[in-house]
Image (cartoon, rainbow, N blue to C red):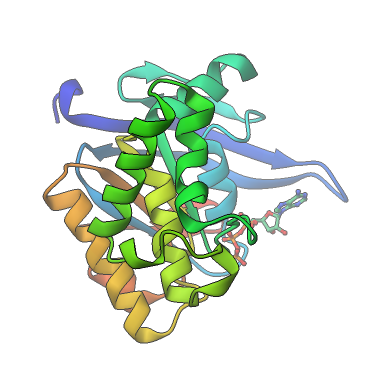
Length: 226
Ligand SMILES: Nc1ncnc2c1ncn2[C@@H]1O[C@H](COP(=O)(O)OP(=O)(O)OP(=O)(O)O)[C@@H](O)[C@H]1O
């Protein structure tokens, strides 16, 4: 693989927790993810999936090894640098959507872009509404986030993750709270983002059916890649 086509490069990642006892949770983990690839991370409970995602997503900086995202070395960087990097390059989707319940769905989607401050509020509102329409939740725009269904909430959360046009989207059990129908809808959204919009998608999932349909499965066992 040429460097230009790599979105994420992880090398020799070791991670330890020290309480209650010293525990090595990731053991010499290394892999590449290509731009536009849709990858799932699987493994039994406790195998280190969430720990790895926290590290890859720059939230946890206490590890050994090196990580490059979009050609930039992100290991060993300051929190200020990483916060800016996250805003510009990464989108996040979690099992629980963490939408602000009393704010409108549209406002929820707008918030990361308002925080970034690159565009005017009018432009951001327009972009947020477009993203919501693309994900089939345009009609929910003005409703409070607490007043729509769980599947719709997750699509609003995906629109929020996309609002700053990140090239890499990291997800921790994004369908863990959804029924089969909504899981299928969310899968199709990710697949389209990867195939048509060349977004790189990394999803931690317990759902073998979901994982088996992604481009590649990275399986962890006891902190090692199989
Ligand atoms: N903050 C922490 N302090 C100590 N040990 C931790 C901490 N966080 C996780 N661990 C341990 O690290 C190991 C890996 O946890 P991790 O949450 O990454 O696994 P996982 O594969 O995501 O599990 P699950 O599928 O249940 O979410 C587990 O043994 C867990 O108990």
